[in-house]
Every structure is written in C-alpha cells, then in structure tokens.
Image (cartoon, rainbow, N blue to C red; front, side, top):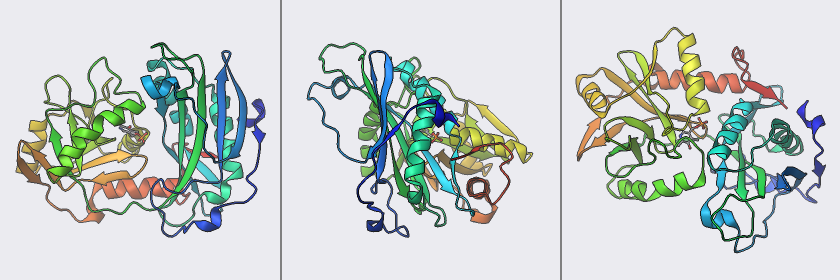
Length: 356
Ligand SMILES: *Cc1c(COP(=O)(O)O)cnc(C)c1O
C-alpha cells in the first residue's frame, strides 16, 4: 500500500546467488540476499530510491560518518508462514525507533513511505530468500550514515539510507554466562544509550572482551551513576522471573527500548501473569538467586528472541541459576508463542504481523 506513494527504481541482479546458500545451515550475518535498497538524502530530500544488486559502495576517505560517527541502524525480521506468504514483525516500531535514533544523532529522519516502501520493494524481489525452515527467518538491517565529504564537526547535510537482508537460522547455543559489570558503562543519563547508534556497540566491545577473558560470555550492564541497578545484558534487554512475576528494568534514556521487550510484556500480561517494569538492583537479583525466588534470567532481542542465562558473576563470585526443565520455563513459553505468531501457527491477536 505504501509503495505506491514513492517511486522506487529496480535494477535486478543478473544472476541470483541463492544456489550458493545452504538453508539448512545458516550462520548469522554471513549470507546476504541478492539485492539492497538505497536512498540518498540530498538537498533536504530523500531521492534516488532504488533496489539494486547487493554490492560495495565507493566512499570518500573524508566521509564524515567515518570520523564523527553519525551512523545508526535497526534490526528486524521477516518470516514465511505455512502458506508461503512473507510477513514482517512490527516493522513500524523499527521505523519509529530509527527516527528516535536519527533525532538524537542530529541526522535526517526517514518518512514512513520511504522506510516501508523500501522494505516492501526489497522483500518482494528477494522473497525467495525468506527461509521457511524451522526457527529460520530473514534478518533485515536498515541503517543510515552521514555522507558529507567534510572534516568539520557538524551535522552532515547528506545521508545514505540502506537496507539489506540475511537469511538466518536457529540460534542454538548453551546458556551464556553473564558478568555484572561494575567498572565500565554502556550508557549514562543524558547520553545516547536509547539510540541504536554505531558508537554504542564500539564502546561495549572492550569491556565485553575483558569479561570473555575472565570466562564469561556477556556483560550485564549496570547504571552509569551508582553501578547498583541493572540495565541490559550485552545488546539485549534483560528480564527476570521473581516470585512468579516477570520483572524487567523500566526503560530510560540509558536503555534501548526493544521491540522484543515490548512484545513480551504485552503477551505475558495477556496470559494473566504480573509484569513489573521498575528499577531492579543487583542486590535483589543476587538475593533472589540465593533464596530461590528468582527462577529465570534471560535476554530479549530480535536476533535470539530470548536467551536464558545459567550463571551470573558478581564481584568475583559466580551465582548459578537453578535449572528448571525447559518446558516449564516462562522463557520457553515466550519463545514458542512469538515463533508461532510469526509463522502463523497461532492467531496474531495483537496485530503485529505486516504482510508484504
Ligand atoms: C537492538 C537492541 C535491543 C533489542 O531491541 P529489539 O528491538 O528487541 O531487537 C536491546 N538493547 C540494545 C542495546 C540493542 O541495541
């Protein structure tokens, strides 16, 4: 419906690369579909909207985003239902959040028809790339970066918006071990933690590397003021089950507002389970593990949906979460529900799915 509002040129790849991909063995983020969507913001307008073969860009060494980091992205997924139709999960939420990030980074915003028109045009030409194998999906990466060729520290006047996609498979891994980080921070009040901007990820790599050297897999970020309250885990939102309730840190300007987080809260509330969005202290979590009231801890994000944790390390001591059978866990119920909604096995009561 939105595509009719914008003019998108199509240049098709001469030959599809799809035969080169083993859809039963899909590593994350390594196979790129045949096409990409590109648009440029020039003279105050989005123009030159096109779907073209996935290929390299030619960039000036003085490209401002490479120096000063006006660069933002989104991550979302499309699925195939049993009838073979392609559906995206809550794409308008990603469009809105991309503009929240753009505003914080002082970049051009993207009109709905450009974002949605680009997505739809791209997914139509590359519909064959949307996997229908169990637990697989098409990961979609919209992103935007400054393109002025200029070395002054000032907002760029020009931007490129691009979308490309990757078929991705099931994300099987053993439960990651989390280290509570009390020295480095991901974000702080007044900062850019709520924006999906490239620099946030660069800043998290060094502390994560240190945690991995110490035998952990991921970091549990604490607040940037007191290191007392839990914010996120790795690049995911974090959730706990305490006394049978779902408890998750309330969002703020130092926490990224996940679409997965929001969807889980809506679903779990609809099942009659209490959800608390509030401050969660490390002390509460450690005590909860010790006295058995805290039964689950898991990350929530588009890439993995939910990622249950087995162990939390805090001030040199490791706290094991007691193992509950997977079938009895809330994380597993959430995972199955979201997977079923996305593939059309249960009714989409919240109106989350967007058909291409
Ligand atoms: C993207 C992201 C999330 C999860 O957001 P979703 O919309 O659920 O994928 C959480 N935290 C951070 C820091 C992120 O970058």
